[in-house]
Length: 247
Image (cartoon, rainbow, N blue to C red; front, top):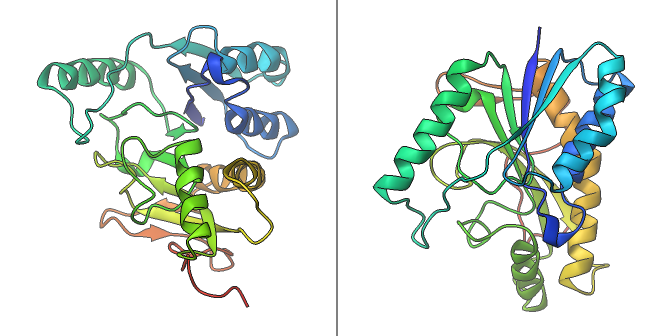
C-alpha cells in the first residue's frame, strides 16, 4: 500500500490556488499514479484545496482509494530572519509529531504550501519551488509572485536569461534541501512577471505530477548520504545555469 499526503495552502483570497495538487489527483484518477491512500492538508478550512477535495472525492473513492481532508487551523510563520520563536517551534513539533506518529505514510508532497513541516524523514518529503533555489530566489518570503517579480527584475537587468521550476527534498532550512531537478523556463517571450508566472505554472503542471510519480515508484530517491538518484534517461539537471545562452 502507498499512502501519500499532499500539503497545499490554497489561499481563498488569491483565487484558484492548489492547481498542482489537483493535477496530481487527476493523474491518480487516470491511473498514471498508483496509490492506496491520499490525504489533502491545508491551513484554510474552505479554501481552494478543500474545493479540489470536494470535486475529486467521488472520482477517487470510485477507484477504491481512500481520500480524506485535514485542516490545520494554525501553523506558525517564520520570522524575517528565517527562524521561529521557541514557542512556535513547540507548536510545529507538536502538530507534526501528532500527524506523522498517528498515521502510516510513505511520502509527503508540498505543493504551494508555505508553512514549515518537520518530524518526517527528508527522503519522504518533497517540495516544488516556482523558481531557482540559487541566490537570490529562495528565502522565507520568496514564494509565489515574489519569485516571479524578482526573476523579471533580474531579466530586465540582463542578469539572467531563464528561470526554472525546482523540485527538491525538504530540510529545516528553507529551500536548501537536496535538489531533484531544475526544469528550465526560457524568458525571451515574457513581457511581465505575470507572464513568467503563467509560463512557470504551465511547466509545473506538466512535470510536477511526473516527478511525483517517479518518487512514489522509487525511480527517484534520496540515499542515506543525502545524494539524489534519478533514472539514467532523466532529462533534467539538479542545477541549471540561469545566465548561459540557451543555444
